[in-house]
Image 1 (cartoon, protein in one colour):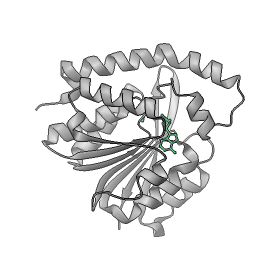
Image 2: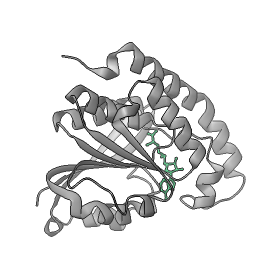
Image 3: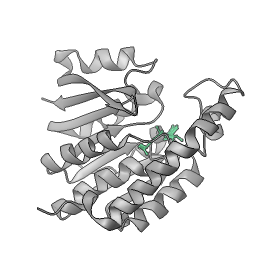
Length: 222
Ligand SMILES: C[S@@+](CC[C@H](N)C(=O)[O-])C[C@H]1O[C@@H](n2cnc3c(N)ncnc32)[C@H](O)[C@@H]1O
């Protein structure tokens, strides 16, 4: 069976980006933490414009696997950054033969670099890039139904973005949320974990380079 993420054209781009992120992000974190900006604000993400902030490779593989197993054709991603998670998700579309991933990023320079990375991985044709605040860019021109929603932007916006996309979800859609161990997510997680809201939700913990990260994997059930 063909698997794009193991093929050289994609693997080389992913390896390079993961290595660059490991070498680069600690320095950016250190510089930005000295500025005392509140995490999640627009000023914070502007200051962090050189940070990759990527999913780790293990979780990237899981994103690919979930999208592929679901045979997703329509994917929405909140938080593109330099496009690492986008590459895993777009690979699943490519291996299914078709589909569209709409991804949105607030910082224009990051979206441009993501576009180049997706082009280097020969996946650009599966991706539509939307630049700006997700609450605006995802307001309209969405597919009738969304098969897979990946939330990886500022945590305080997860619930608002979910509510924006909610009318497009179908029974069987997966909503995958990253960094759910971070603050600001209590009301979002409570919303997903209240069965009357139409979701079946599970917490997931992954470990990479000695660091644990929380995620939430949520099935739309009705
Ligand atoms: C954790 S990073 C995304 C990492 C990416 N998914 C990956 O794995 O490579 C979050 C991104 O969300 C972007 N962002 C911040 N506020 C946003 C907003 N209101 N709308 C869309 N993107 C936003 C940030 O600039 C940042 O690049």
